[in-house]
Length: 237
Image (tube, rainbow, N blue to C red; front, side, top):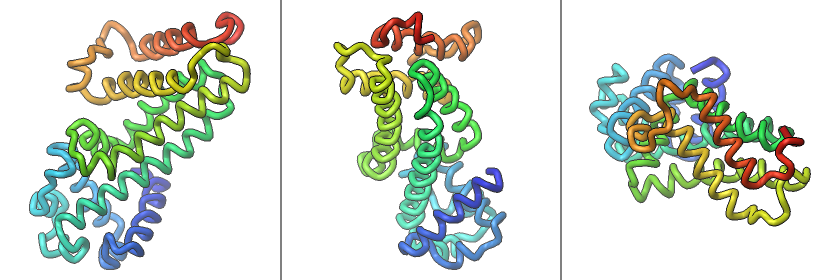
């Protein structure tokens, strides 16, 4: 985590303290100790899924006692709720900043920047991304509502904004069912990006192979979408 990232995370921790999801004791810890606890939670969730977090294992990973964890979080359920809220808020906030950068780009550039930027951002925030993707692909109903849905809705909103702005600029044919295309493009971009981040998913989807660089895949996705919905592609390149 970079310094700027940690400042953002700490602001969320303060909010969660005010909401009763973490104790003042945790907020007052040395930042390195806070990071150790948070990274232990994220690592444990990445391995087995958020709903399978074991508080004793988290304590061992973080190098703190189980009793200390119970002073930070009232229970295992409290730890899980804190981590899910922190994960969702951090990802949604970061996506909001990324979304603003895409708004001024033409359709082709915006779609490619969305996928490339998603990969780059995910690699710098791997702990939060693994937490989210485990929740997304394990199918836990409770996590689906608390973690997956708010982040997934943000993904779809970004794609919706990209396509809506493209419509306003006259980049998309008037006969295109934009509402349906938004959902298809959202699903397509998620499948491509996630397969590049998650080896087990790529084993199924077969998107990434050594002989086809990521750049070729991104260009192919953008070309496929734009040839299907864009006006006079040659002039909008």
